[in-house]
Structures are given as C-alpha cells and as structure tokens.
Amino acid sequence: MGKTHFLLAALLLFSCAAHADFTMRNLGVYIDIGKDGSANVEERLLVAMDMGASRDLYDATRSAYSDLATWKERTGLSEMRHHVSRAKTELSDLRVTPQAIDHCNYDLGLCFATVVIDYSLPAAQNGSGLVSVNRYKPRTALFSLQPDALSFEQTKSGDLVLPKGTNITLTIPQNAEKIYFSSPPQNLANEGSSNIRYYDGKTRQFTWNSDLLPQFQFTYEVESPLEEEVIGFFSESQGSITGFFFGPEGMAAMLILAAAVVSIYYCNKFNVLAAKQ
Image (cartoon, rainbow, N blue to C red; front, side, top):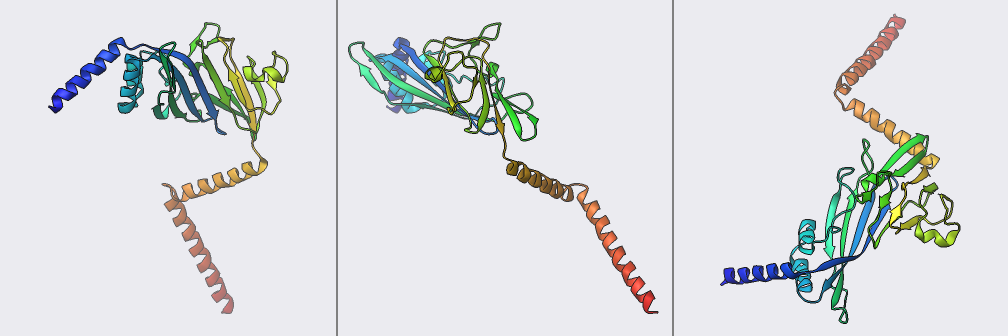
C-alpha cells in the first residue's frame, strides 16, 4: 500500500512538472562586503507561476527540497542559481529558502513567491575572490570589485549585462573612502549629477539596475586606525616568537639558551670563590 501511494505521488509530481510554467519577475542580488573583503550574499528571486500545476509543484518542492539543483530543474529557470562564479571564488554555507506563496492575482491566474539563495564568500587570496585587496601603503587598502566574478553576461569590451528585472546592491563598510564607480548607481539619482564617478557622500549602499553597465568598475579605500596597526604588530610579533620556540628549531634554541645561563652562573660562582681565596 505504501509503495502504491509513493508511486501515485511520484506520478502526480511528474504530471505537475510536465505542465508547470514558471517565469522570473525580479532578481535582487544583495552583497554585503566585510572589512577584510569577504562577503555575505543574498539573492531574492521573485517567481510567477500559474495557479494550477505550477503552484502545486512549487508547494510540493518547497515541502521536500532545499537544494539548488532540484529547484532549477523543477522551475526550469536559468536564473535559479548563484550569480557569483565558483571559478573565481569559493562559496560556503549555501542555502536555498523558498518562501510561502506571497499572493495570487485571480484576474491573471498567477501566484507569486520568492526563493531566497544565500551564501558566504571568503576574503581574496592568491588572486581569487569577489573583491581584490591591495594594501598599497601602510594602514591603507584599496578594495576593487572583480566584475568577472559575477556570473552575468559580459560583452567583449567588458560591459556587464544585467537581465531585465535584475538589480545588484553593494553594501560596504561605513569607514570606506574615495569611493569610485564607472556607472552611477540608481539610488544616488537624487544626490546630484548623473555623471557621478568619485563619491564623497554618506551612503554606503549602492544599487544598479540598468540593463548595461559599461566597463563596470567599483573601488573604495579603507584606512585602518593607528592603534589597530600597533596592536596587530605586537600580536604578529608575539605569534612569531611563540611559533619559533614551539617549532622545530625551538628545542635547540632553548637548549642553547639553558646552556648559556648555566655557563654564566658557574662562571660567576667560580669568580666569587677565586676572589675569596
């Protein structure tokens, strides 16, 4: 009886999948960049579906699956993926969190729901990473977004092409300075000229939703406080000393040091006895 129910459920799910129809209405990619260039990414994909087979398939998949491959297969949406390339950086803690049906439009015969994909990115290392870091002078680092780490279409001239209904939002540390972007963000439209390049305002969150971002570049600098550099120096020095004494050469160094202390002690003792005689 159990096997019969399982087969019927599988057939029903397959039937729904065969007639399901999903479309992407909006994609928001939100990237929160940390002080060291690491990042947390949240992607929110607004999906439209018909109120029949597609809604049934969505609910059935939501109750049983949370892996990206299954969701991409069931919905047939090419945008059901992470938009940071694994070829450029590592991804960790990847989660897929499909939300409940948000609302339905009975006139259109459509329902809407959001699928959230979130993951973490490490700080740049050996040329990889979403954001490169160049510590070109003491206490100051230049952070540069690597456009080819974003898995959107790019033209041969380096223009970034965003699909219709797509927006990218970058949030950077509050102490960032000398902020530069080759294409002005849409959320700064009311802060001055549309030809903004270097930005000196207080906003630290920027959103782009143009179809084309010509030769897209985004950079900023962060200057570390002097006390942070001093603490870092002493922490590094302490770590180096500890590592030396507990490393392969540490035992030999401690034996030599002990021999030197013993030698000095006996030499001083011998000199005292000689003086008394």
